[in-house]
Image (tube, rainbow, N blue to C red; front, side, top):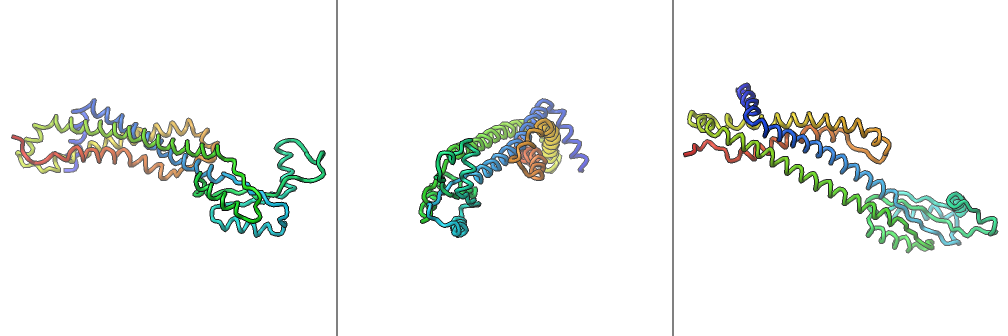
Length: 289
């Protein structure tokens, strides 16, 4: 019986060659786009977290603050729960940074150091949204030893909003391709069913089971899904081989290779299987009159 199902499913390719080919192509494209979308989506999340973790806030200290209280200040900052790192920059180090960035040494003119000590703070990624940053700044300004709180990462916030919009576009394009692929697979299955109407009616008259009618079509859909996955795997491999050198230079871009492979392996067969089941839902043992 298993051999009968396999032979019947293979015969379906010759009965709907063009539709089967279009379904194969569309399913392959769908699998490739699903995999690429997963890669881009996960990479954008990694990039977003990287940017969020590198958003910095500077808290300048009042001149009278004693150096031996720096550790207490750091502990007070970290206890707020939204700071991942608090680096203390002394007045002396502030001079070194100023000279390095500007190339000018004001000490040749001034006999004192006007630069204040400060803390350079890195936010936890969960608290890097614009509204959260405003609340964090208000909290930091309330510290008795804080003279001024400076936040200059407005560009970073714009970049984060662009990344979120980019993810929405990825999802939108993927959904459109999936809908087109589902329509083509559905149309192919319906074409196969319509072309075999007389044969199905004969099988019903001789007492064939519903499984005898449906299983070959379901197997045919699974075969197209597997072939599409194989073809998609080759295309993805070629894409990775071409772009791998560029990707490896961007340390922020990381993804789970196991999930990547699993998604690619199940996308094609699962897409074809589910759409085929939907297409066969109206097929029954009722004899048409």
